[in-house]
View 1: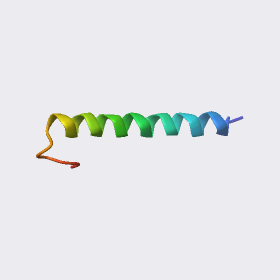
View 2: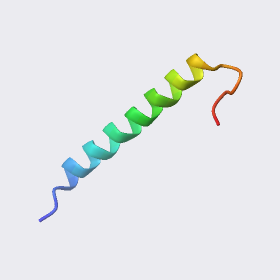
View 3: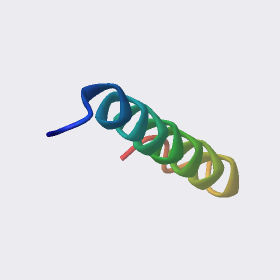
View 4: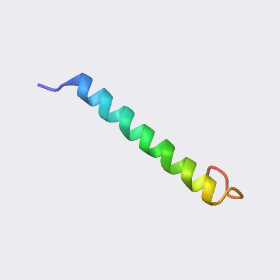
Length: 35
């Protein structure tokens, strides 16, 4: 059986990681912005 709560948590964590990566990329190269 699939644990939907765990799946949701994993998705949220993955999204947060992506957001953090984009933010740090943007801080390194602000001229580029969010590409």
